[in-house]
Image (cartoon, rainbow, N blue to C red; front, side, top):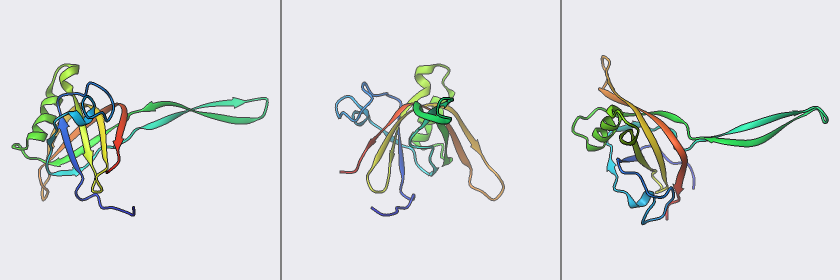
Length: 154
C-alpha cells in the first residue's frame, strides 16, 4: 500500500478496559464498546518505543547494544471542543477522576485503510483552550501503559 492521508482517522474511547490484552474478540480490545470522539485534530502516538541498553566492552573496544524495556509513551490528542460530544465527555471525565481506575481508558485508533491500533491510557488532562481567530480546541493529555495491539485491515 502506498501513502495514505491522515484525514479520516477516527478515535474511539471506552471507559471499560479489556479482560485480556490482545485482539481476542470475546475478551480483548474488540470486545469493548467504543464511543467516537469527534472533531479529532491530531492524534497521540499510536505505538511506543524500545529503550536500548548499552555496554562498553573494554576487551573489544566496541560499544554493544541490546533491546531493553518498552516505553509505552505519552502524548496529546487535540479536538475541536464540543461539549455535546460523548467521546470527548468520556475523556474529560477520565481527566477529572481522582483515582487510578476511573482515569484509565481504552483507545481505538482506526486508520483510513482499516488498520486499528488499540492503546491503554491514563488521561491526565482535558484542557479547552482558545485563541483569537481560531476554533476553541480541547487538548487531551495521555500517558500510555502496556504495549499497543495492532490489528491489520481484513
